[in-house]
Length: 258
Image (tube, rainbow, N blue to C red):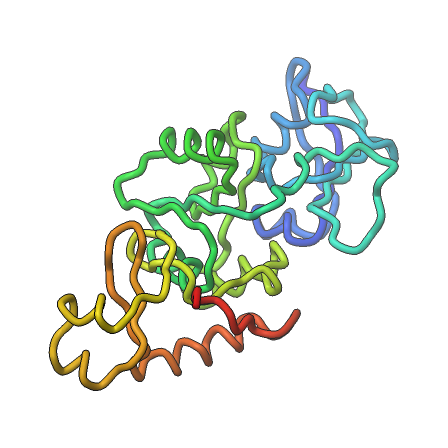
């Protein structure tokens, strides 16, 4: 005979539920003795998105086993409410946010690098490689694939809701509170390497005569050697970054090494 308990998901966790289950309690039928983590992921919510579970009013770990009649409330990360006395399920935030992105997020990778965030992206990386990189390099996985976030080896990850790259970067900056951590133009948008200022003499043999004549400042990626200069497009990018970053603080002005 099947047993059941009641689940209720809060805030953005409802994004992962079928419409009929959102913003309300609903029964979950089960056999055997499943853990609450197994049940949450079977419902469709990745464990990386969950920070607090209350069962009958008490905080529990992912290892708690369901009992018939349990009343279960599931919450995402708390930004402003102090819940220091209960059982946190998410590992401590990474001190320096670094990212690894799945194959669907190439434009987002470019925007993150443009803002100065250490971002690994290759369109050939599979799920296993992404998880290995995240674990070995202490990176946060950003993905449009729920499956990878349900892997037990994943400790830090976030499901990107939007499919629009400009909305995606705003989503990431807001969710991880990155506004004051940005260093615009400090990373290569092609390879993620660090960018530094170089002399005009160094730049001259590596750019066209026209470019050298019209522009005064040049920069170079220390990894792939790509040359950058302050063309007309820089103004547009600065405006975009300013709009992206100013809600929580001023745009950094020293993103490029002098």
